[in-house]
Image (cartoon, rainbow, N blue to C red; front, top):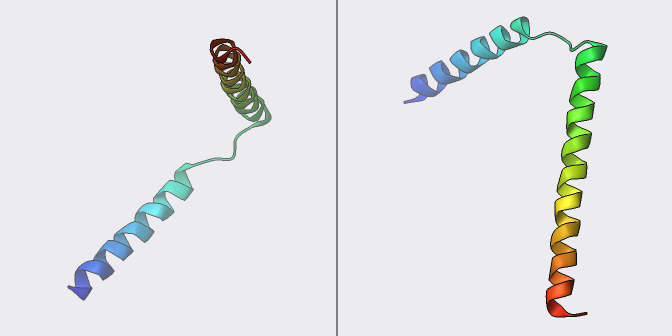
Length: 62
């Protein structure tokens, strides 16, 4: 049973090494795109929350 855990651990380490060798650091253009998408997502969630809050206050009449 201990051997199977050791084999799984070795397999995990070898696959992790492979992933780190394949990945690359994003360029400035990719970084800006990811930042824009993240910002739009945050704004969208905020707007949805504000709309729900306004509808809730209108329904309650406060």
